[in-house]
Length: 244
Image 1 (tube, one colour):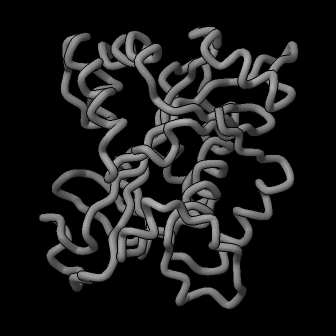
Image 2 (tube, rainbow, N blue to C red; image 1 turned 180 degrees about the horizontal axis):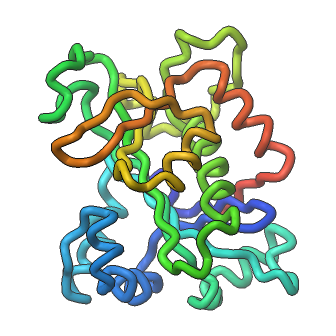
């Protein structure tokens, strides 16, 4: 997506950067793991196919992807200037995973037959992956999601009909002004057995929406109510967005 083509989001422990060609080899290495492919419902691709996928996603206005980089605890990335100078030199050993947003017409998917179709809005599916087991359960996913959610809230046209408090939703890109649709809600699909991921999203205000016993998964949903104010307040004092 062009929206984040030249943008990075800096948090206390992680930096979210656009998925680019220099990350493809690492991503391909992750996807060689059968467990990761299964958990992300991904097909195994050749390295050349991964490069083509990266190029395709960068131009696809229905997909938004950031790579998660753990900040060097010894220092670095302390300022916008530092980030700009070191972006292309970031060590791949600090790349931990990715976080994604997939947009689709509200109620249009095959498993949403029970949802009343809303032609004036879209729904947005979230995915997050911390690839290395040794880097899980360390708070990286939590911080990455908070930063990502704040970015979405402040950069997309969202349905605020359930809000009791006004938020600053004026930071909408020209791309999104041209779209006369809005995001009605965010959702995530998680394996029924994955209690860690379920607890992560519940902590961020997502509510259980339904269970799909056939696919052994549950869907959690975040409507744009006052819970998003809490997410913004938790990140705005620590988060800064840099354009490179």
